[in-house]
Length: 307
Figure 1 (cartoon, rainbow, N blue to C red):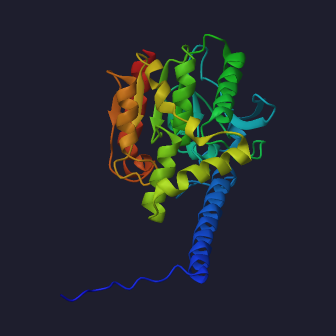
Figure 2 (figure 1 turned 180 degrees about the vertical axis):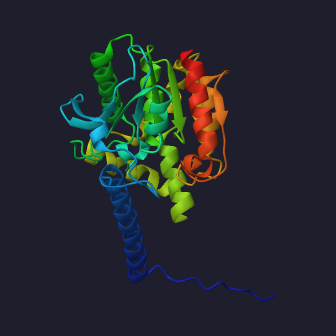
């Protein structure tokens, strides 16, 4: 009987060194990409504008305001007072790497419908102070609370109040409303359920890379830069505390930035009674793709919430 011998490369010092070198290069590559990803997350572009943005608000028609958040950063915003005493107020929270200008197309029709508005820049965004964002973690939540405190100090503690958040701002809104029982209603547009899910979705959808390799190093670099651990940012865990107050959840079905399944996770955590609208389109594209229906749904929801 013939004997077949499989030739295997000998584990020579050279081969061992080559394997070790390749492993080191791969580890350095993962580390470098993770550090760059974390840095781009925590240092957004302050001058960003939504795609197709046009200036729709004349700064002369609003009150330019500043107010301090917890820890000291001064936040900048535009205030449109309620048109009459006792009228409701909507405080708006913009998305990641955006600023107050993200709401320029929304504020005019909110104002026409009789609502006061506050739009402002989170720390590290737009004109507000602060070197880093923590993407809907403790810092942005404190900024949102400072904005709510500002309008209550101006117009009274019993001010009828709703909050309206887009993307990151929606994740902030969930956490703030869950801890503030005096906020009457909430609207979120493409909010995420948990920040680790956003990172995983981004690596899969945009980079075609396995997120399991990058999740921990990105989290650690972000913590090194900001002191906040990505795994702690889980708005979905607080959504149950919003119920039974009115909640309008908007999330596009082809969202490439936030997993569309996050809408279902948030709705399930809130429980029965939530209003959900799932229009077609990419991330926060409902206003552009369905402008009339978007406006009607938001204004109809607010009318019911404050009636």
